[in-house]
Image (tube, rainbow, N blue to C red; front, side, top):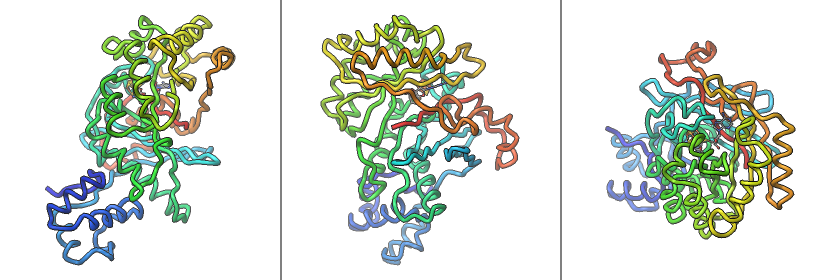
Length: 378
Ligand code: SAH
Ligand code: SF4
């Protein structure tokens, strides 16, 4: 079996090259060819010795993910559906803005956490993605966009791990992928512009602080344990007091001086004035001392099996005002890519039913249904 070189961060690639009897700087050259220039074919890596190139072509390859489909929204949002085998598909979404380009990346096929408002959660868990499968999403998006725009410089400035899956339940594959994204010889994304979003896997928040501190977003969605238990089931294992204390600890290592709390606005469930009051109380006293917080309110993207409704815009604004009045920076997430089902909660929706995707599929059936979520901001 040939090794997929997208599975390595630079240290991993150095180890691999040493195993082939090569010097470490050769690995850096190879890493730059792959990630900075998007080259997969060893014969094009002209400053590598012929002997290394032939060694590599015998034992390794740079294997991207097969693209099932690409959709572009009227607002410029681009969504790719990738085939990860055995009937599983995952999605990535690119959101262009004036001052940045953000890619929303998936970490798992499905998700085991099972949040009530999330269709990935309803779909269940298929499997973890490998480092190569996580990184290949960025590899494809960045080099596709550069080629298309005739750019030689970076197009993607921000990455958010907010596609399908719970990144901190796929920790071992996640960390090398993050490191390759951060690496100046790789994608050179800054720590502040690389965000891991989690439903609250407390021990792994601590490990991330140690191993690879990047910006952290916590999917909170409820201010009390009783309500959060019912929306985000992992709360039963790691209740709010533990989660808030982990956030406090994370801030010591974090590249930003606040944690982003995501809050999906569900009509009549978590969007009342009392919830805003409880949320403020949680931020101030839930961990013993105050946690420096920014809020991101997400209008719920409904799907039939959820039995939940989106809060109306006035309710969302009222909630935002209550937080803001108490000094918390609060944003309401704009929905982008609605027309191509790339907004939060719409990813990988009903692939089997979408004839335009079906026609382009190289293999059937893609099992993912109904949809997942992704988030795009920062
Ligand atoms: N599993 C991680 C990261 C992926 S989910 C996490 O939960 O943080 C990314 C975000 O999308 C989460 O904040 C999640 O709550 C949100 N989300 C999921 N389903 C949604 C929906 N139907 N509408 C709006 N946001 C949703
Ligand atoms: Fe998993 Fe995140 Fe969806 Fe919850 S919101 S089910 S953790 S992907």
